Length: 129
Image (cartoon, rainbow, N blue to C red; front, side, top):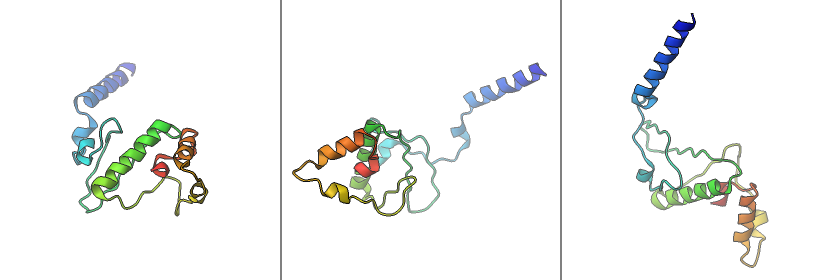
């Protein structure tokens, strides 16, 4: 029985190496350059075209990691420049973001306040954007 299981596992590994899942998937061939996103900001790990006129982009992130959040902000900025980004949604949120506490920051210190919030993990890349 051990030999049979071993042969099946070996065969499965060989199939996955020789024929990766992308061969069987009908994914739209997209890369980050097509969207104007440099590889230093992120990479497209999967895509799927459903034939509609709208595009939904899911950005996975490393929570509470300041540089990852800055990269997300930069990705959103590029998408807005190129495509006129209309809406941004965050996982686990609803409604409009309340920015009233940030609008009270005066004397050009908003950038510094945003950096502190980003570095401490209280601000996401989409909120930073």
